[in-house]
Image (cartoon, rainbow, N blue to C red; front, side, top):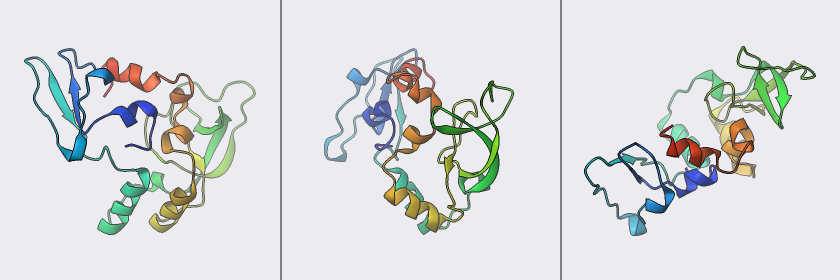
Amino acid sequence: RRDEEKARAKERVFSLRDEFSQWDPRRQRPELWNLYNGRHAPGEHVRVFPLSNWTELDVWQYIAREDIELPAIYYAHEREVFARSGMWLTAGDWGGPKDGERVEKRLVRYRTVGDMSCTGAVDSDADSIEKVIAEIAVTRLTERGATRADDKMSEAAMEDRKREGYF
């Protein structure tokens, strides 16, 4: 989605990958006026991301309009978390909390669901679709900026993972 991490903003709807499934932002084709070029050389392939131009708010408005049921984790609930790098992370065997990191119960919501070693929660009381939409409409921090620990490690973390074929 365009409002996410910088490397995702470079992603096209049609995303060209080489024979090793690696992504190179310089080889991505322009998509002017919603014209897409799916041609590729032998060994290459194309991944298609039809929601690339949507924002987090667009996604939630679609969920509301279509009355899509979601797991409770996307809504605010009380959870035991600890603070690290400005985010609330859930304790687990993966490496947290460390010495000096205090676990506490907080009302939080996950703006994205991913690997618990790098996905954080945000303080929130949004326990319905309407409240989530209202919360997102006024926030100035993107979902990835608020909740992805590995994105805070390096500006190129996402691009590096794409080159390695992570997604």
